[in-house]
Amino acid sequence: MDSKDESHKDYYKVLEVDYDATEEKIRLNYRRLALKWHPDKHKGDNAVTAKFQDINEAYTVLSDPAKRIDYDLTGNCEIDKYTLREYLTRFKGMILTSNGLGITHTSIWSRQLMETNEYVDK
Image (cartoon, rainbow, N blue to C red; front, top):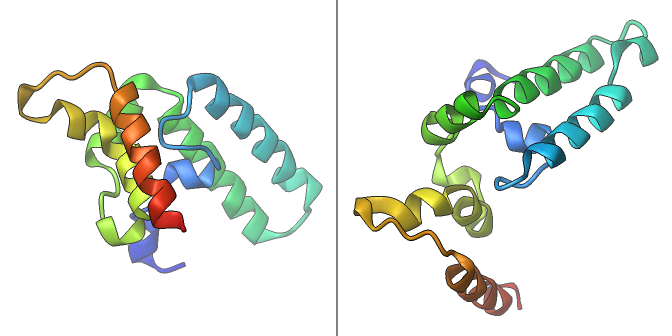
């Protein structure tokens, strides 16, 4: 992995969770991955150690509400790195509340997005 990729880690993908994952889901996936990739289970494998460090780094950020918000607002926002569904899921809160609209009920929007995605996926 080159230095450019290092600076743009997607912590949600590292922990294998959705962008709107709950704290509980993040914690459970962290524990599962930490056990799977713990260096003690793969003695002497530097790639495993690096993967384990990435998992810990991702959890440190996503498990802290203030760090997670900061990451969500300033993290990797490159559109070409995400599918449309991933991009809209990750940034729907910012999209729906932009310009002070303050939309808090996203169920209508989510339903419309899902219906739109059904047509796109076919």
